[in-house]
Length: 197
Image 1 (spheres, rainbow, N blue to C red):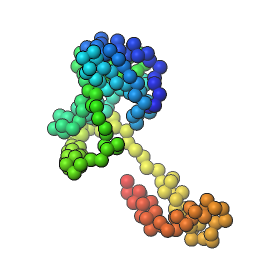
Image 2: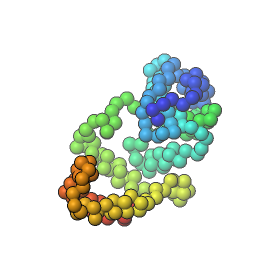
Image 3: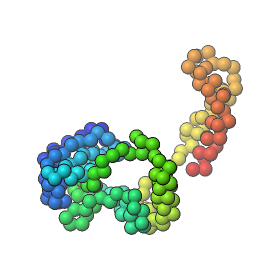
Image 4: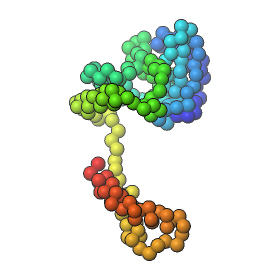
């Protein structure tokens, strides 16, 4: 989420102190992350220890922390475990939010930096371990399942006859027609393969 939730920094700092034993001196909002329901912060203590703080809207059971613990217990060392509260919980309720704390890793992610051959090999090994893991039914039942509607595949297929038709008069339409005609084998293959997912 690129915007801050409406919860004061002082409330978050007090929660870190009371529930985690973390005496944060500063709390910095970080406008990043893919979770649209979460705000991200960096908390830093006086001794310069840093923590990654995730503040999510609402109170809910966070399956992601269970999955992370499952992966780590399966021996996948590349997983970063959340910091537990003083009561041993992986999440903490704070007003109308859920707080999750992780160690802060200072560096760049794989989207902003090229991986070395060794890093690619390590990533592949870790992903293999993830895919070979047997997830308990209790966790499987909590994981959101994607549904793949045929709507967009059918829409693309409905355009096929127009690609081979007379050239379109509209300049933008003509560009699209030429592009699709040139890439028709790849487009058909992608649409047909998408059915099996």
